[in-house]
Image (cartoon, rainbow, N blue to C red; front, side, top):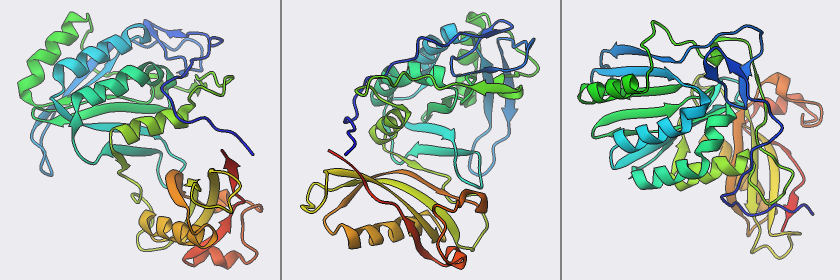
Length: 325
């Protein structure tokens, strides 16, 4: 039986990673240009955007800073420019066959203090990781501040905040550039930044769920960009609470399923119906992963005996449970 600690607020960055510098930009530990001679330049790019689809006209800024001051500057921007209630934002690379990123947002406004607590706990991971983005948006005044996956900062705001934001950028000594080119504009490498040698510290999945659950976030682009109207194969990896199931071999279990469904909601319903047949007293604690898969993702280990079963709505693969106390 495997043992998994309950989530806590502790994580540890690796101390064996080398800090790379490209031009005058110190890169995050978790992502850096892989080619020799890449020169990055600190600065910002601004643009005026005409409002559409219910949005007002607004200004956008894309900012590139050295990692040595990224956390402190973002803390200042969050404190000075976000309103008292915000919607948290989270983004990560996606396993989904039809898109590159998964995006999460708070379903209802949360207090800025609550958001800042999440940033204080996990911000130093986000500025080093290079694989996920984190930020917030507010409506009064309308503003969004977001740390992108590869370490650049995006700010969008109404005209009432423009002068204050540009004064801050000038005070930081950042020149306005015609175009900001970040790490993602070059061939680059990613590194895992968390030290997981101690089982009591958090991994990236613990951090993700600590953030999205504390800020009431839900996936916002789950069914976007795929074929319309056709059922699709999904991969689901979830955690079961088996506290009230006397026949279970542990209080918790991880299980993977493969289902064919029209959308995420139907995929969840199919998975839960199948698991309730097997564990009548179980509760789904959380969906750790749920994404659409392509033919290349369906290996011999998970493929059904009859391949045409993949084209029909239903469950066609279920793993053995991995129990933990």
